[in-house]
Length: 203
Image (cartoon, rainbow, N blue to C red; front, top):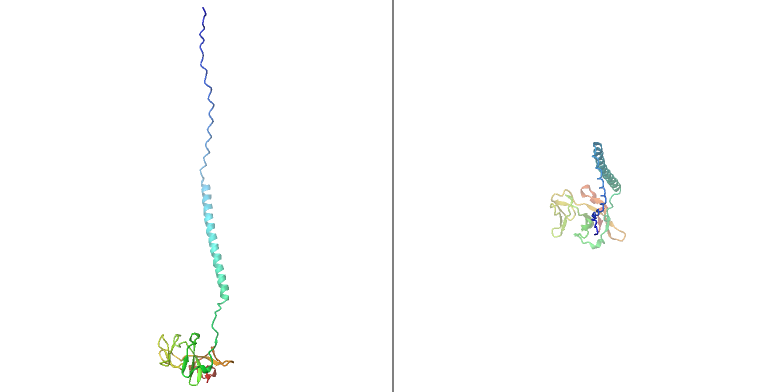
């Protein structure tokens, strides 16, 4: 008889688990700001703001000084106004009728008048407040529309607030025979200047 030996089989052991990786260490906490660091931060912030305002102030000062300098330089060079010429040719004497006022030169501040054997150039500026009168042919007078001053064909004031007659401009005959009105010369009746030969032309 065979004898059988009972051999008990031991179970095989499970393979060992790999060791776990160590967790990374947490980052170190930032140290709390001390009082000195806070003060330094505030001072730096204040310094930056203060520096910005200083820069703005210096910029404004520089621009204002530059403006003053430019204004001073501009003042040294006055405006050049294109004024009309002071001497104007007004045609030939025989073109003017006796007792007539020619107002085609009104925009150049004078009327040409032929009256009582002479030709003269009256200023179109009222002697009251500087308005421009109109020649009323039917009434044979200059009438100011502003305050009602009236002047005869001679330029003498006779109604309204105008205190004195109209002024005359210098007048002469140019080399080509035309009438030459010179607005750089002014003649006033109340000063006896209408007797000056440069204030009229005999025809």
